[in-house]
Length: 550
Image 1 (tube, rainbow, N blue to C red):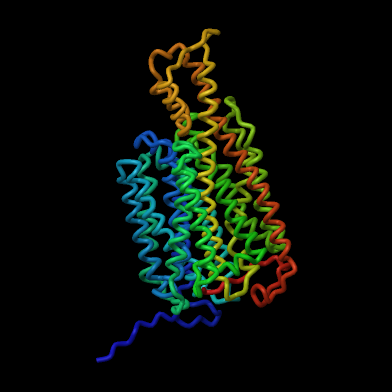
Image 2: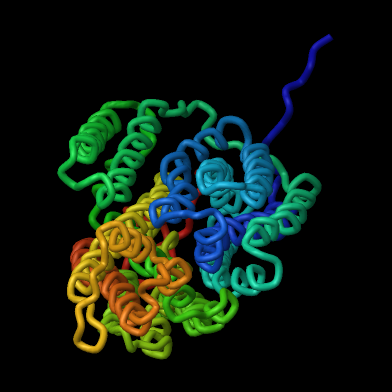
């Protein structure tokens, strides 16, 4: 008896061109990406409690974030290819189940090592979901039938997920403890799963496209080696054989990745697309958005809780200017793209981020939280705009046939930016906080009388400050220093401010430099004809291009 292979061809479009259950598919995808982006920022509200409960140092906390973002950066494009071959709905559901299961594992973690490891699994589930999300939308919204609006909604939801993290996380941590920030994924995931199984149709892409295993492996090794070296550089020594060897390994595999991608017939990342100036500019803008402000929010949250002594919820409330600005920035970005060309809107977004970061600098021991309000508002508008327009902006500069690859590369650039930003800013924070503390401890006096601080006590204090522990250090200061508590408190505030100042200065400088580069790259493409993008578009019309179903 013969058996028919299952038919994964999407049902024919309705008279209006949109496939049945298109809105449900969009809702399911948006629920998933909201959860993914929420988990990127919600942990910022829990870092101080995780640090205290699990006795974690700063590198352990960095891996809580980077362990989640690394798999997304490394496997997102591979997940998209597997979705084309195996079915996007099937991959999405599998990734969703893995993500929620790992979320439960995170909540049950009894050590920082276990938490970091399970976050990697969670990130892998997220990579699978994110890799097939835009192709799922494109499959039910054919070009010219509201796809641009659907993609803009998708981008706005991503921005909302990122923005909601600090406040929602603070409320959950204060009320139920840090494990609750992971358990909140259960109801969201359950709703998405039920609707995905019942109302989302299966779709396939190019089933002849092969999975680029070599590209995936070389990219993964490059990212892991580079990030581990940056995170551990302060502790191991920047010139130690291990750190230098890891940087060399990262460089070697980065070269191998590029060489392989140029030669293989079905590359993980089509470098001919990446080489286009306008597209490279948008990808760089996505990278720098995540690598500066999104990364900085984690260290800002630690500073609010450990140095300014706010509870997680109080810290989340004080981050509301950033949250509200992100939410406003998303529709603002969509409106501006109808008035201005993309070669102006994209660098405008990153320029706002740079300006906001500069406004946050100038920190001292006496700096209160209100110092950061202006910067959070300005930078938040920029992040919200980029979240809403990034995918469509990238599609403005590529052919319809390359749209799937383009959106995947931009999403990957976001995750790589987060990974590098968290690691780099953490290295700067640790270096400058410990250097400041070491200098101040060497000249510590009470009433003009020098205080002798043994090397062991000095190391404990400087290590704690380098980990962002802030005033929590006072809880383990030996009794013999009770007369110097006022001076030590001032020292802690000075050192914490020095670390955050260095991280924010680096982020502001990077955002400024890359904004100029982004503007130059995108402006170079401003005369490209509509044949280089979607058929009905000109670069100068300012409207987002349509994506393909990949």
